[in-house]
Image 1 (cartoon, helix red, strand yellow):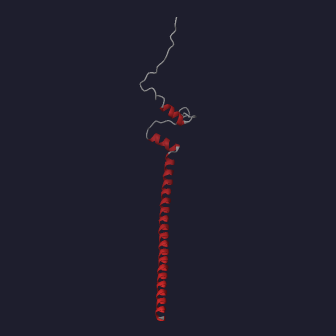
Image 2: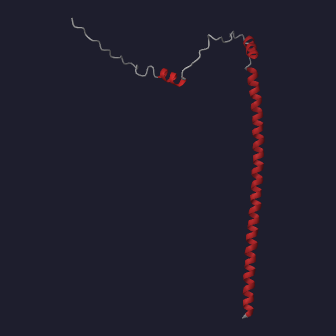
Image 3: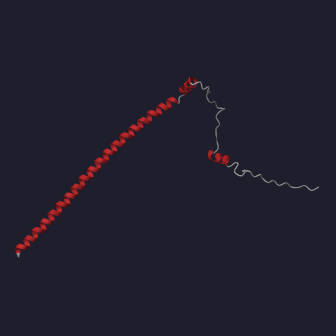
Length: 129
């Protein structure tokens, strides 16, 4: 009977070692997978950063071109080249709005709200002689 007890202990020990190795291997495989995912994410982030930098560079170049075309000299040159006959704006042509533009536009929009074909009724007091 002693022989069977030793054999049972060895079997239990072997099963525990196999489970421990399997669990350790699974943890190791998970760690490798996580490191791989971190590497893939870092590579994607680097690619995105480089594409964002490229877009910013092109946007800055476009903004520079637009600003150079909106300069006073460029506009007067285009006016003369294309024979547009435009004159520079003066202060009399510019109207400054000092009130709230939202209220002003709402008032302007609603000005004829109640005048859609109806004639307002006016009451006059009749004079008795």
